[in-house]
Image (cartoon, rainbow, N blue to C red; front, side, top):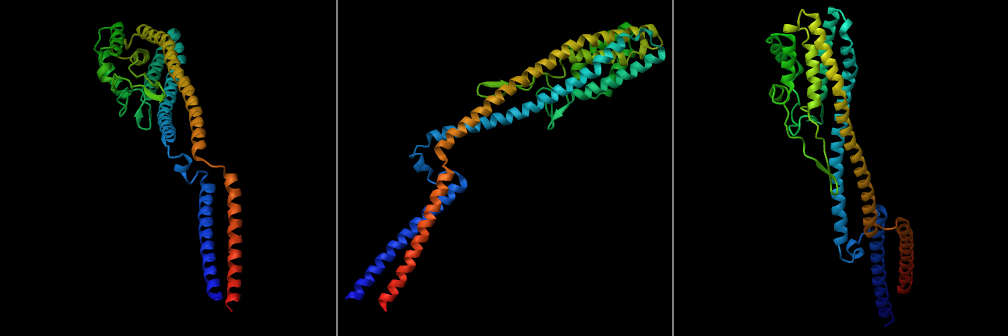
Length: 335
């Protein structure tokens, strides 16, 4: 009877050892996963079955991520707008002073100023046709196309208009009238949309946007003044140096006056950039706070788990050693 008793005891011990081995292996796998990911493997247990707080944290973080995307897109538009307006101001500020001082310029020099104005007109048009990621900056909601018609197209229409006028003053008035609200610029110059891009949500309760378009009155005035200077040698203004100088001086004075409005536009864009920076900083702080709160629910202490993993590995090695020794002893008993 003794051999049977020993056999049953050995079998029971083997079952216990197998169960202990399985439990230790399962625990070790869990610890390896938690140590590698830094997150608890038993999330339902850690949350005691209540996922509502975690879901709220995730929803807030997703909303802030969406705000981040919108903010990044708006920042690019604002930076492009600021760069374009800087180009316009740089290209017209000093030129305005040169035009005002044109009284002593020779007739050949007047041609140079007219050609220069034509080139600067093109530069301003190009700047106002700026785009970011294929979306026009100053075309309002019509972001899929340019804000302004090509400079050569507008200048050709203006030259035809100037040539048909009886005198230089009438030619200047006609050109300025073309850029005024209700004039030809509305249909043949500005090809964007009159509605600006709506403000976008960039943070909880905060919406910002870029409302400046190329049909702004200040920008119209700048384009009109450059056009008057460019056309100073066309139609009734040609061949009359005094009339040409008067047109160039007028263009310079209106360009100089427009610099204040241009600075105001840049200030408006800058204020939006500053406000966006404030909101972005607040959003980043909120993300950090939410991530810490979420981590308190889902994360584990990696160092603590690594220590526990070492302990489990030690227990598993000890179990292997005991199992091997037991097997040897059972073999001796059987013999």
